[in-house]
Amino acid sequence: MIYVGIGSNLSSKEYSTPYQTVLSAIKHFPKFGLKVCKQSDWYKSEPVPVSSQPWFINGVVEISSTKGAASILKTLHSIEDLFGRKRSELNAARTLDLDLLDYKGMVVKDNPNLILPHPRINERAFVILPLQDICPEWRSPITRQKLSELVELLPEGQKIKKID
Image 1 (cartoon, rainbow, N blue to C red):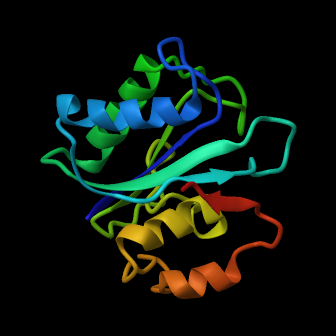
Image 2: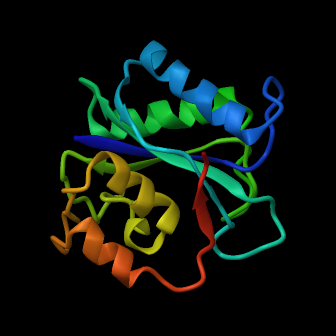
């Protein structure tokens, strides 16, 4: 399975809200050879680390593709660019953030351009909770911990709520 985290906390040129941006981004996946198989619920979450930025809209999708991990990452960056993503500073506000969270359980640590699973996957409620929606049996490829265990280990104070 291949899992992609999706987030936005700024409006894009064509879409007036981050929520509309993430919905539209998913619709673009098939045009880039990424088939969406499952989609989590959407969550509104405070930025991590905490800042004065607007809150994010976050979710996770399971995709399938014939592309390799590096190619998918490049494709995700192309989709971000399409939505006006500017890469300025770490943890800056953004129109669209697409993270390759897990690629078929692969572990890649020694490539500065591709780290799998995503290096902060275990620390982020806005990833763990949506991932639990679509794949409750998922385990960390590194620690083998279940999502239910990772939820218990999340750092305190991350504000997140499911969108109805």
